[in-house]
Structure formats: C-alpha cells, structure tokens
Length: 456
Image (cartoon, rainbow, N blue to C red):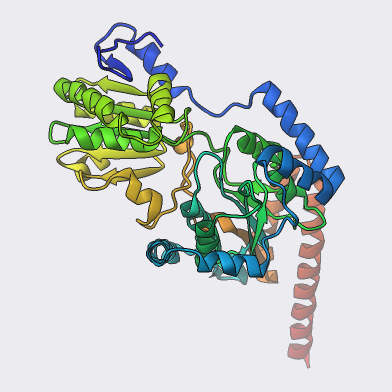
C-alpha cells in the first residue's frame, strides 16, 4: 500500500501529515468481505449438493472438507455427556462464569411487546415473538472456539427460542471437542451437529433428513462460511456477512507499549487476514510498539499467522492529535475499538462507529472475547457504520398489531381514501369506503330510531 517502514517494523507506518496518506488510509478501510468468484462458484455447488443429496451428500462433504469420517451427523446424548465429563473442572468453572455473565448482560435487553390505545377506539402495538429455530455456527479450523458457542447461543436462550442447534466442524476422529460440548450445555443449546464450512450452512438453511432447517443462522466463519451465508440469505435470515477479525487501538502517551503490542497480536493471531491497527498522536509510542511487536512475536505460539496478518493488513498511524485519531477510527468503523487513553470516557463521546468499545488501559479486547458480557459476534469490514453486535434482538421477530373501531374509522377513513387515490390504488380506497358506508347507515338508523321515539 506504499508505506513508510521502520527497520524493525512488522506493520506499515503511516503519518497523517504524509503526502498520499488519504489514499493509503482508504486502502486500509476498504476491507469489506467480497466473495471471490471461484469460491462463490464452489460454494453454490456445495449448496446444491446438500439440497439434492441430503444426509448422504452432507456426510461425504464432511469427510472431504472437514477431514473427518463420522458415523452420524448429530452428537448423541451419551457422547455429549461423556464429553462434558472429560472437561477439566477449572475449565468448566471458567466456561460457567462466562456463560453466567453473558446471560446476565443479555437478560437486561430483552425486547418486550407493547400496546397503545387512542381515543375513538384504536389499538396499536407490537408483539414480540422468538424465532422458532435458530442455528449457531461455531468455527473449528485454526482454533477451537467454545467462547463462540456461549456468545451465539446464550442470547437465543435468553429469549427462549424453542430449538437452538449448533453446527461445528468435527475433529479428525469424528468427535467434537469436550470444551465445545461443555459450552453448548451451559449456553442452552438443544442439538449439536458435526459439520463445518459451506456444507453446514447449506444444511442449516435447507435441512436434510437429520439436520432441521432453521429460521436464522448466526456466528462467524471463514470465507467459505461467509459466502454460503450470503447465498442462502432469503431462504433463512443471517446475522451478517462476517469478515476477518479486526482491532483498532487509539492510544495516547499514557499507554503502555507492551500492552498495545499484545492487544494488536491478540487479533493478528486469529487469521492471516485479520486487521490490527494502532493510531496515536505520540510518535515515540509508535516506535516502541513496533519494537514490542517484534519481541512478543518471537514467543507467540501462532507467530506465523500473526506475522502474515501484521505484514499484510496491519498499520501504525501517527496522527496530529487525539481528535484526528478518533476521527480516523470513526472512518474505519472497527469491529473492536480500544481507547487506551488517559480520559476514555471523554474520548467515547466522539466515537460514532464501532462494534464494541473497550475503555481505558485495563480493558483489553480479550475480556470482551470471553466473559465481559456483550456478545463477541460483532460487525466487521466497516459495517459497524450500520450494523450492531449480536444480541437478543437477533433472535426475535416483531409483529405490528392494529385495530380500528367504527369511530376511529369514521375519523381517519377519508384521509386513507385520499392517500389511496393519490397513489392510484382504488381498491384500497374501496375497502375503506364500504366500511364507511356501513358506519353511515348505522348512524342514520340510530338517528331515525331516536326521532321515532321522540314522536311517540
């Protein structure tokens, strides 16, 4: 992207005062998920295979793409219980704490039905109902994600979705990791299926002999999963077309370079396509973070992945001041925004676009990934400008309700007819006019009856 690089720098080093900065920063911002033509063609083929071939095709695709030979697609109750028993007690306690905190957070946000009444006999309102069946996709490629089970299933469980199913890639021996099974139990999942990738999304969308078709699919995944979700949208609802993970840190001179580097690496280690960006008005801090990145990378277990991420999609930007740094953050609209500044509450007032915001020096993005409370399924690729984090709202639907009694119809009917005629839809007007005619007849009949009583 045409960047200035330091001798030790793993990432692009940019300054807002540089000529051509706007072009370089625009390139960083242009990261929205866009399906590759070859991938989309392959995914369409997989979807067609699952739709036409059902379980048999799905099992073959699990063997081919997940690298596992499974006897059955669904985790049996005995297998589930055995997996739970195999979880280390300390791990079980940590997962339980996470599930409890996420559940407590989402319980405070449950949408409710409401009604309002107007004089003249009008009832208006909204009825909120849970979706009947949802599918939570949990990745299992380069890492295992029991936390993703909790973050996707708990909000659905909180609003009492009747059936919550989980799809996750099996291990080579055909089993699901015990910690994932434990997380599913704690989160409130009802069924688990051994399948990953595009074929799992197809099965959830269209159903097979074993896998039930769902109303909505949520959860992160790789490019194959994201492409499949975009292609089945309309058959089912989806949360979003999730892209690679990303973090943007705004830091001032009070930030600790080693902590900033660790936060950047915490996202870079996810995937080679992950985005890790630091924006700071302190030039000296930028150099120190570069040094820390090189130092910490040597000890990182997933160093190869993180290095590729930093070199290809990472950046450190030196801004003129903190206001400019936050302005750039708003333009980038990151999935995770860390405000590692002296007065994060003041800085937050300027933030417009972010999936989740982490305030201060002692709130690393990692706490949000695991047990802070909000779901870690967040808008990526700049879509935080108009999308929100996964929450209980994603697992309910709203139905508008309305009722007009004759007095209200008499009050507003003429305007309805006028608007219908304005749009050239005479049938709409007639539907109202016929009712108004009956209301007028009834009124005339009542008046005539009263006059007859007076004469008597």
